Structures are given as C-alpha cells and as structure tokens.
Length: 161
Image 1 (cartoon, rainbow, N blue to C red):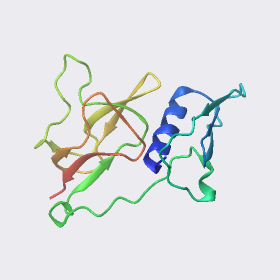
Image 2 (cartoon, one colour; image 1 turned 120 degrees about the vertical axis):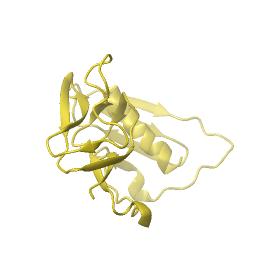
Image 3 (cartoon, rainbow, N blue to C red; image 1 turned 30 degrees about the horizontal axis):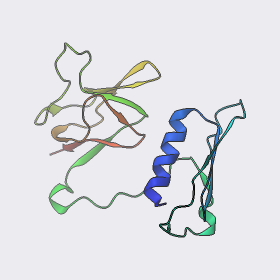
Image 4 (cartoon, one colour; image 1 turned 180 degrees about the vertical axis):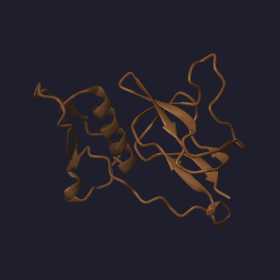
C-alpha cells in the first residue's frame, strides 16, 4: 500500500462519517480515528493476502491521525514568483458565480481591488463570499467551478503590479 492510497483512505473515512476504521493487511495494520463521532462505531477492513508483495511501511505508520498535514509547496517558477496566491480560508465547495444564471465574479484578466468578491465557498449550506485583500490582476484561476476545496488550497494567482 502506497502513501497516496493511505491518504485517499483517510479522506474517504473522513467523508464517510465513521468514527474509526481499522485496516489489517498481510504486513500492515492501520487504524484511522476521526474523533468527531460519539457513536463509537468501528469499521473493520481486512484484505486477503495477495501474491504481490506490498512495500513495508515504517513501524510509526501503523496508526495514522486524520488531522490534515500542512505541507510546504515547492517554490513557484521564477516567471510566476512575482504573483500572489489567494488561498481558500475554509473547506467547502468553490463557486465562481453567485447563482447559476449570474455572471462569474472574476475571469482571467479581471482587475481586482481589496473588498471585491472573488468567489463563493459553500460550507455546511452557508455561502461564504471570499473577498480580495489585495489589488491586482487575475492571472490564473486554479480551481474549477463547483469543485471541493481544502483549507489553504490555492484558488487564484494575482499579479499585484
């Protein structure tokens, strides 16, 4: 089982609402606890050993915490280093329009000012307007409309000059 598979499993468990999942394989045991459910339900997943050998994980990988880890993003290429990245302040669903029949808040090339609405992120049935804190020009929109976004996920690249 690769690290990417484990991360996908963690995301699946978090969305499923289960409070705890235990995965037991030939050479690895993983317990994922979400900590937000009071029911105390545990889901067990046991994989039947296969002919292929899976890579060994270090002993400390046996139990994993579902707290999202903030990873450093590699520096942007020198051409893009002059741009400011606007990131999502919350987890939710990203929308570029206030309503399906309305125009987009911003497009690539749009000039923005502090306080101007850039997008809407829906979280728990509440629509949160995300306002710009800087002035500049939208260079790139990094998220598709109606896509889920994570906390601190880059949404826009802005040229502040």
